[in-house]
Amino acid sequence: MKEEIIIAGFGGQGVLSLGKVLAYSAIMQDMEVTWMPSYGPEMRGGTANVCVILSDRKIGSPIVTKYDTAIILNQQSMDKFEKTVKPGGLLLYDPSGITRHPERTDIRIAKINAIDVAAKVGNSKVYNMAVLGAFLKLNPIVTMENVKKGLRKCIPSRYSDLITLNEQAILEGSDSVLIIDGK
Image (cartoon, rainbow, N blue to C red; front, side, top):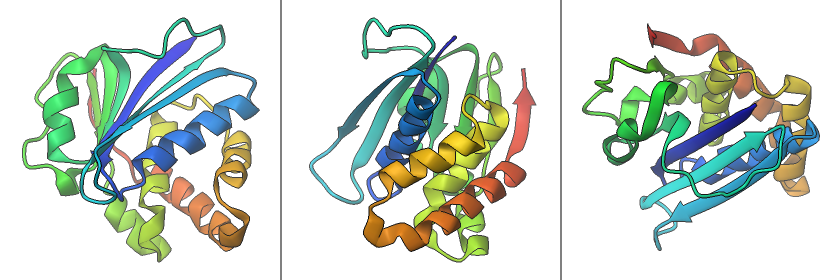
């Protein structure tokens, strides 16, 4: 098993953190992992993406041009990465930052209104965990038990009070994902 994932959006949306929690969760599950971020010089508002590869075997290279899954959080990322999803792969997106919705017919498409989930949970900082919950509902590649361990590795102890909110956002995101096209 090998899953090649691109997570892309604006800086400040928690793109890199989402990838990091996913990577640590897979490590807790004794998987091989690469986590390769890419971002512009801006701290917030610039583009950011991270490639995460999870595998039950050694990973030969962290460089990927075609992905099993694309998690898209803004229009620039949709324009850039929609075409890079392998046929039969998954494109998960948040429609709030999208003006042109996915057009491919050879992939699975799902959406999550992560802003609404974060508002329901009561903290905009858990937006990215709502997206992670949606992804894990569609592709339960890591267990929730290991996701909780991954969260504890990624969230600094001074923010430990946010762990419960993040867990809640993951569960709400899982319940809120909408499958648009199940190819």
